[in-house]
Length: 351
Ligand code: TXA
Ligand code: MG
Image (cartoon, rainbow, N blue to C red):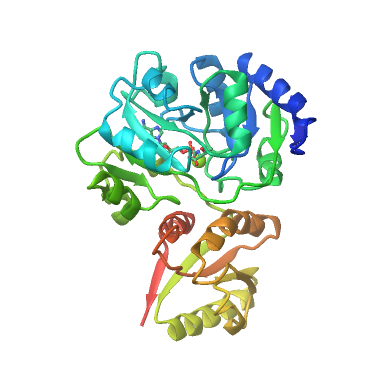
């Protein structure tokens, strides 16, 4: 398949791009597009043949449901039969924006995009390109992140092209994806609002708006054996570069000492080694390729860089990575959640 790649110019020439993309979506095709979090891979949510193509293009397991992207609050009532007070409050506080709500679905929503669940994930993105695409096409857009299943989500058009060129109809390029980690997922289909995936909007912010909320235990403790995770995506390998990542945490000087020692050993045994560090500590590492992940006071910058850095490891043949543990006051919660998954839960505590 020949993939059309079109770059948004933010002038009237864009009209042609939207027209073409809307037509492809209406005809059951696939279009990748930017959102404020990561790039999405879109198809008509109510057309099961179209969404089946998403699973094929990504190599995604069919039981892992998709998020439906909408433009307006009233669309919630078409997709969910129980738009409760939690939903109304979250919409008022955070939409459009980087939050996804899990709600009871209506019959209109096909089982093919919910993995057979009786709930549906709904998100109203704030990115102007995503919003216009939803409005111009006049459909609800089912869209997972536009990466090959298991790989880091794409934050740049080059990432989408790398994974999807030749597999989908069109890629809309506009490198203004500025959050860099996927939306916060909140399950509000039950009594206790539960965060199934941390994101830019934190547990504390959700709690403040809803009065109560909790982090799903599977996030803090990992998915226990024999337990079915609430977000089917939780059980799959994710964000993983080819390299083996080890997170090293503890007192700062001890971390630096341990990483320097391990990085030297790995380099000596022939590995291509990288170290992920904060701006403050980066100059103190003496072995491997040192990657500055941004200041410890700027969790948003680390979030923006994370997936591009993970992808860069594959490009440059890095096969062993040591990473500091980054602060988790804010969007850092999401950064560490993704990094721990990328590391396959390999965390060393030094003392
Ligand atoms: O920021 C984002 O959310 C991006 C952009 C493109 O909007 N999308 C995204 O989609 O990250 P995806 O498919 O990569 O991740 C969706 C996650 C999966 O872990 C899936 O299991 C979960 O949402 N999910 C979807 N529907 C669900 C449901 N009904 N109940 C529980 N979890 C659900
Ligand atoms: Mg994804």
